[in-house]
Structure formats: structure tokens, C-alpha cells
Amino acid sequence: MTEFQFSCLPISKAMIHNLNELGFKAMTPVQAESLPHILKNCDVIAQAKTGSGKTAAFGIGVLHKLDVKKFRVQSLILCPTRELADQVAKELRRLARATHNVKILTLCGGVAFGPQYGSLLHGAHIIVGTPGRVLQHLDKGYLSVKDVNTLVLDEADRMLDMGFIDQIDRIVAHVPQKRQTLLFSATYPEKIIDLSSTIQKNAINIEISGERANKITEYFYGVAHEDKLSLLIKIIAHHKPKNVLIFCNTKLQSQDVADHLFDAGIGTLAIHGDLEQYERTDVLVRFANNSCSVLVATDVAARGLDIKELEMVVNYDIPQDEATYIHRIGRTGRAGREGIAITLFNKNQAAVMEKYRNETRKFDDVDALIEDEDFILVPPNVTLVLEGGKKDKMRPGDILGALTGEAGIEGKYVGKIDIYDRQSYVAVERSMFQKAFSYLKNGKIKGRTFSVWVLGKSYSDHVD
Image 1 (spheres, rainbow, N blue to C red):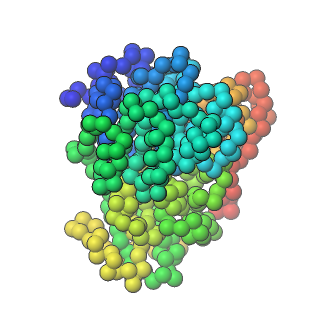
Image 2: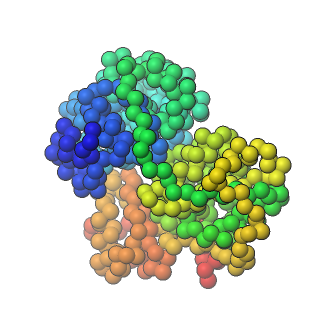
Image 3: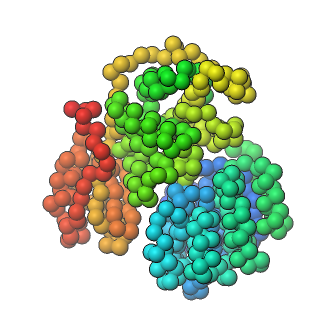
């Protein structure tokens, strides 16, 4: 397909209008290659990395064939983690604005089972979930997928890496054989090809060879084990990035590194499997809206993160394989921007690191880094939480209008606004957050007063 305009697709005018409103001016390569086949109800296996537009590719297809009047589960989308599932569901809801009364429900572990069962009793058109929790609902008879006509496996390679193959097989056994199956994977290992052959029929293979590579400068530093934390701070101080994603191999290590950086004056949070779902949401919101500068995570916890302007990725621990390395660093240097990838390794691991050497990667001496003993990294924004959300008919424009209207705060000081069912998050530039907090605490939005508080631990010690 040579024409990359959405208007060339056989989709509704309302969908095209909504895509235009959302800023989808032209299709990405994976959308242009896969959507014509998806809309013809073909099975598709597509190689697509994070940030390539794959969610819109299968999302447009799912919504195009949805019969809203038929209040049954018609599409099932499986994701490796709850963060990715939440992200996919959020994007589908945006795409579904052109279609009235579409109900999209997430079924993920780490949250209470009962409320999910209650939501299922009220029905849904589209289910987005993790394999384990979806299978639980199927086994208990709470979820029926007998009307599913589209099955989507998003980031299928990661689901297989995480050991979900048995759960996937059992879920597929519940879904009608006559269906469309869409499989998206960042890599094409043999096990993905095997999976495709067992769950798809005559699948169209989409590989985007012409995608522009991310602009990433890759550095490698060897260091004594006891000096890794000091070197990490030195590296951040040397490059002075706006934001950083640090990968560790264990939950304990992630929290230890985050605590150490925070104590050193660097606005840092950790995300790992020991956090409750509400804590994970809080962390991800703060990192996305620049009220946290550094996020430390394991590979599993970082699935679903989609930070469009991430300046640096650090491998505090060596990835398990080069495929994981590529996936980690691919989160920076997107959309034509330049990114930095740092990998630390103990000097006794030098032989292992030989496989990473090539003509572009830089194995530098730590002594070349510029010292900055007074360096601190304070997040530019503060996040305020309002005890009101979608259930209260709250919209981003309501909060923005209150702050820029009666509160008298210029729009440039108000950042990202996220609306959830019961709560809303608004990022405000640090210099203005006290003024915003005071208004939101005492003023009204839509004629009502809502409880408000500052999210997370304070960085004031680092700026006073």
C-alpha cells in the first residue's frame, strides 16, 4: 500500500474524523502494511516494536468490526503485563470515541477479583487482560468468550518469555475456532513462528524493514561492584538528562538503587512486582508527567511503559540476552530524537561483554566522565491528585479550565492530566503547585469541591 492516509481505508467517516482529532495524521509503516489485511479479516503476524503504532493498528480493526448492539465479548486482547494492558485499554477508549457505548474492560492480576467479576456481570464488548487473570475468570465461568471474533496477542514474544504459553493454549481452547487472530511481536524467534502456526490460519506476515532506527549513542562502562552506585550518579551528573529509565534484574535491587539515588538528591522512584496496583499507577503517572525524573524497574515491571521523550536508558544490570538489551534501549531515541544508552558491567564480566562490541558502541573509561559533586536532579513538576474522576463526569478540560480561569495560572504551567474512574492527576510546574493546590483545595470544579493532595514523597529538601 503506497498511500499512508487513513482516509484510504474502508473505515467510517466518524473513525477518520476521530483519528484526525487525536493527531493521527498518517499511518505508521506497521499500520499501513497491516491494516488493509486486518480490515479484510485476515490473520496477521506483525513484527512491531514498542512505539510503532501497533495498538492503533489492531485497535482500529477491532472497533471496525464491533457490533455495539450485540452486548457480548467480541474481542479478546492478551498482554504480558497489567501496565501494558492498561495502556492498550486506554488507547482503545480514545479510538472508540467515534463509536457510542463501547464497553472495554481490563482483567489483570494484582487487583481484587471481586470488582472484576461485578463488571463482567454488566457485560463488555472488548476484554484486555493478562493471560493468568483471564484464564481464572474463564475457569470460574465468569467470562464467556464464545462470541469472540478477534483474538489479539500483543507483545507475544514477551508473553512466551514470561512462561505464559500454557495459559495461552488454554485460553485459545475457549475461543471459537472461526475467528481472526492477530499476533504482534517485537522479535521473531522460532517459538513465535511455532505459536503462529498453531493458532493462526494462513497468516499474513508483516515485517517492517524500512523503519528508521532509533538515534541512540551506546556507552559501556566497566566498574568494580562496590563502585556501581557511585558511578551511576556520576554518569547521570555527566549527561544531565531530563529523565532516565534504569533497568535492574531483581525487585530488591530496583528498590535499593532508587532509595540510594533519592538520598543523593535525584528524584527517583522504583516500580516492581511488590507494589500494589494503586502504587504502580501512582509511580507511572508521576514518571510520565515529569514529577519523577528517574524510574528504576525490572524488565517485567517496565512492560507497557510508553514515555515518548525518554532521554536516557541505563542497564544497571546486564540484560539476560541481546534481544532484551535491544528492547530496553529502544525506549529512548524515538521519533527522530537522540537518546543515550548506558550499560554498566563488573570488570570480571568483561569476557561476557565481548559479544556486545561493535564499531558503533563505545566502551569508555569512567575517568573520562566529568565530576559534578553538587549535582541534583529535581523533577520540574509536582503531581496533584483530585478525589474525582470519570465516575464524577470529570474531564481534563474541567481541571485545566479551573486552573487557568479562576486560579489565574497560565496554561504553560499545567502539564499532563490523567483521568481515572475515581481520581484525577494533574501535573503542575513546581513554581506554581502551591497556588494550584490552594485553589483546588478551596475552589470548585463543575460547581463541586473535591479533596486534593500532593502525590508522593517530597523533594523539597533538595530545592530549598
